Image: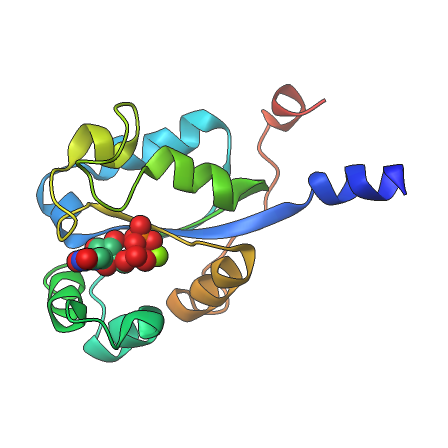
Length: 160
Ligand code: UDP
Ligand code: MG
């Protein structure tokens, strides 16, 4: 029972992180990537990409009944985004903490949104909300062959 529990706590997950068009336009790409890089997660996919309306609608399909949905789709398709796949133990929940609350005015200082944004409709970054959605979103935004499986040299210095 206990070894099984420990093993499940060490579960390696994947999350889809995206610098939204405002983050790209404001020159925040390097700053945002470095938050995840410095934390110690592993980058497995990265590209600058202009997404279609169809892809944006599929990505945000759970929100398609919300009043802000059309504006959200316009925002996400308004310019290039930076698509990233990150891997690590607890990466989904940890990335959400690094990103901060959806409304940047509620996001704690020290978080990406808390430090770099002021409005929900211009909150600079996306992060998956569950390991299942992490997998779903990575499959949606990346084609086969665009992800890299590699071993960072720092791996033994991040985990015992
Ligand atoms: N959003 C918005 N108005 C709202 C709520 C959300 O424009 O009232 C946008 C915002 O860009 C947010 C995205 O829709 O990041 C997705 O909403 P969600 O609730 O999933 O927030 P997130 O997971 O990004 O924190
Ligand atoms: Mg969300």
